[in-house]
Amino acid sequence: MKSEETPFEGGPMDGRVLPVLLGITGHPPKTYRIPVPDPDGGPDTVLVYRRVPRGPGKVGLTNRWKYEYAPEGVPPRRLNWPWSKPDATPRGKPDDADG
Image (cartoon, rainbow, N blue to C red):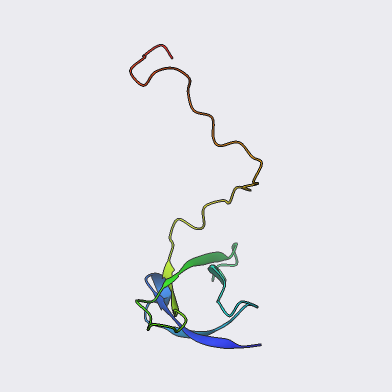
């Protein structure tokens, strides 16, 4: 398995560089979760970092990635099937108060 030295920004891991395993496509995972054990024996705290582009890449070369701290966690994903209808929009005119 290949790994890549990936920097972390923000949160408790700010400024650290860790080797992150790359997937089949050669990219690190979109989110990186780090479990932190509670010193009092309570439930673990999970730090969530989101993958973002590191900066403009060179022409013809792959873009490098970094992880930014996401204090709110990861938003839940919704399946997006090709045959799914878009979210319902209210009927009526935009100026109509009654709908």
